[in-house]
Image 1 (cartoon, rainbow, N blue to C red):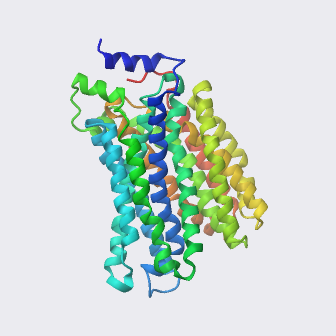
Image 2 (cartoon, rainbow, N blue to C red):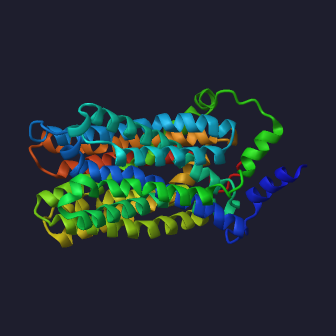
Image 3 (spheres, rainbow, N blue to C red):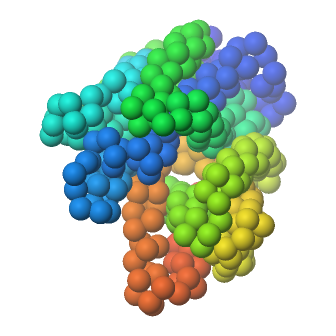
Length: 441
């Protein structure tokens, strides 16, 4: 048996393996830092879409219509993520995880800097909003390719007993990137003052170039995963991984998507609708944003703790705990978020986003990845996760707004929607096999 095969088998069976080695520390840093940077870029756009783009790229329009178009470009980024998962998953399964991670980071950096350099509509007319939409689509494609590769880079290098914790570094980068993007944008809003719409908002986008260079330095030093090296060594024919996924792993895609929707819908309720509701109810905007950032900070630690515990008690059991807790807390959290007080909003965010979503986020990367064989793991995992992101994060806010309008403004239907989604996710979770003790190839 070859050395590569031996290394792969050792990782699959070594219950006492350590993540505290030079190589593993570099791998985990690459997974986390890469996700932080890409989510910084992607979610920085979210904040700017709320307060900048309607005034810079969608001007001279009826009241509210500019903001609507700004949010439309926001949505297309989510719609592009499954496409990115398919494209990068295809080549990630054929030519390597590492190469795709490097390419996705470069593409994200170029598109984000491009947004920072894009002239306003007042300067180049209709080309400005069109260019903004195209760059947003490119961002979505890049992020769609990032998640699967970052999760696999950590998971396929890690010993079996620590796969959940290792893979969670990819997901923990999400809230960390959101914190960084929010703080940098707020900083330059304060620094630029009245010039914020002229140049202040552009600086955080341009700073992405620096972050990308730092991320590439780390990512280029990481070795390809043993699982992919084994596929290369065996010379297995893998012409179209997506076809392979839907021929042999269609059930895994459906169940993985269904399971992941819960934590993404949880985020839509708390960090999107909940934030807007709190501001509308009279809570100071700066207070709301600071509490949102604090909740994201808390969730990073909950993600790591939940993932580590999933290595001991199993992914399905850990996810079940989060879903049951989410069902129990759904209505109380909705009431807290709409209480009109900073204390109530803080409690709702810490429970809903920090605790429930954090618990669900921890094991989900390993849970989904373990459903697929190495030959199509990048493609299958990416399609499942990014499809869930479209449903939960992309259409979730619109669904929430819709159920409120149906009942004339009451908020209890939001809790009902939340619970319904969680029950569907729970059914998918229970139908999927446990992968914690599985020997992945």
